[in-house]
Structures are given as C-alpha cells and as structure tokens.
Image (cartoon, rainbow, N blue to C red; front, top):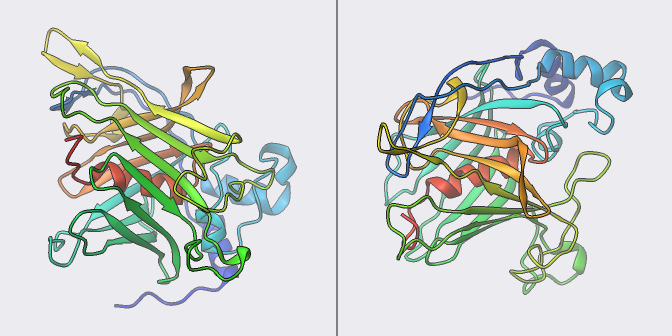
Length: 310
C-alpha cells in the first residue's frame, strides 16, 4: 500500500506527537572483534526525545537547541546535524530481495515508530559501488560512489558534476568522504575508518563545499574529522572487544563506533554507533556532528564489500 503524501505541516506534527528520539540510559556489554561481536561491558548514552525536541523547536528553540531549525519538511530534517548532547536512534533494513542483479537496497527508519525516512538503491557497476539515495517521498537527496578498491566513498548532495555543469550554482555539494584502511597485508587486524565532513553552520546544516574535484572536501581546511574507535583485544575470549550498549545484538566485523578527532586524539563522546540487531536489521545511533543523511551513507559504505579491506 502506498503511504499517503504528507504536507510540511504534517511532518512537523509527526515530530510533535511521535517519540522518534527516546530518552534512554542503557547498561549492556558488547564486544566487537575483527571476526565477531558479543556482549561484554557497560555504557550509558544521553539521548533525545522527539516530543520534547519538537516542542522546544516550536516554543523556545533558544533554551536548549540554539541552532536547531524549525523542521517543516523531511529534506531539512535529513540534512540537519543532530543537536549537540543528543542521540537519535534509527534502524537500517536490508532488503531481503537484494541481489547482484538488481543491486542492494537499504532503508532508514526511526527506531521508536518505524517511520520510513530514506532509501538507498545500489546501481549496477562492474568495478565500483554507486548508490542513489531518496527520501520517503522518492525525492533524490544524495548520491554516493566508491573507488575500485573500496577504500574511499564520497557522498554528494543534489546537483551536477562539475564537468557537466554550465554554472557554478549547479555544481553538487560534497557532504562526506569515508576512507577505509587498505588491509591487504594486515589480515585479522582491526581496520581504521576515517570520515571527513563539512563543518556545521549556526543553523545546523553542513557548510556548503562545492565538488570541483574528488579532493574538494578532503583538502578543505574547515572540516570535521572523525575516526573509528579501535577495539581492544580480550585474551579471555580471544577476540577484539568494543562497548556498544544494548543496541547491537549480533557479532560482526561491520559493527563500529565513530568519534571526533581533535588534536590527533579521539574525543570521549561517541558521534556514531552502528551494528547488527538481526540478520537484516542494523541499529544506528547518531549524534553531533552527523546529519541523518551522512550517517546513513557512512553505515552503507561500511556494509559494502571491499577488495582491499575485507
């Protein structure tokens, strides 16, 4: 059955009435290994309640969320960074019918009420991974492509490639670069994942970086760098371990956590947590400075097979 179309007002009302981002303090133990992940240590995460968020937005934004905009449509919401100090919970559902012929397909939904937000469809390619990302209303919102080895993925917003644009305003923006360490000579060791995204403006949206070439964002000086938290080796169980809280249920090399990098060191606060809840459902917890779109794309890039990394 086709979902009924919603107006901008309807979308704002959804945020008022549905618990999209729920408050939670969880105690659980999870381990992550290069080969497996199981339950192991304790973590509590600070959160956010969508009902409270939307009330703050409509009544008194300045009190708690200084830059979070009035969310009147889905595209604005998906392209706005999660406010600092809050975590939003999503699920990524892998289409069971996906195949090499029709391409992998992933959907993003809110955890609390299963509200569908985005779909990423993989296009056919002999050497690279290419994804078209659309909103729940089938509106294009981004594209992601990789190099042949799978060591780099680039996320773009709407627009045209620089080589095809007739005016600078038509050139698409670069929203993220996700880089994976080449593991050909390091089999069995934890890999490094590096993420580069534009800095966040006062209104919560990523600063616009035009993609004049593949290195436009990486070479930009005003960017945010993030890196995955490396798991620790646990000699008792002979596996690498990480703390994921109760959101990750199954062992997988694809489970990972990202943190911001400052002065060459990882910050304490997690910005991104991702892992398997079941065979075809993965839980995704997103915090500042990621937008839902950026986090969705990063998660998908990690799920893709990589010649030089898996």
